[in-house]
Image (cartoon, rainbow, N blue to C red; front, top):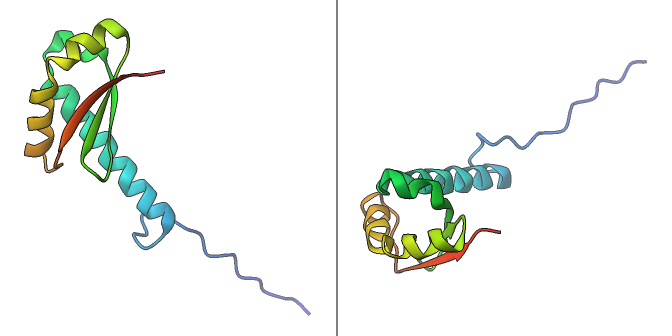
Length: 100
């Protein structure tokens, strides 16, 4: 006698109800925010921008590639805060950190 086994239900990123779907949605949002912030910078500053993170409390963390880039990006904190707000990400505070 042959038994037919059903394969286990897979959690797919496109399924919005799955934990993996939630994680994929958050990752896409973080990438979109980083792209928006990078584009808001002058071309000469973009290479110093290593990434960003926005926590649920509204703190936007900008990661700089090196200490000298961190100093330059601090001058652009207000512009990046406005760009994020205009893009739909409410920011309460901006901090600059070094990417490790």
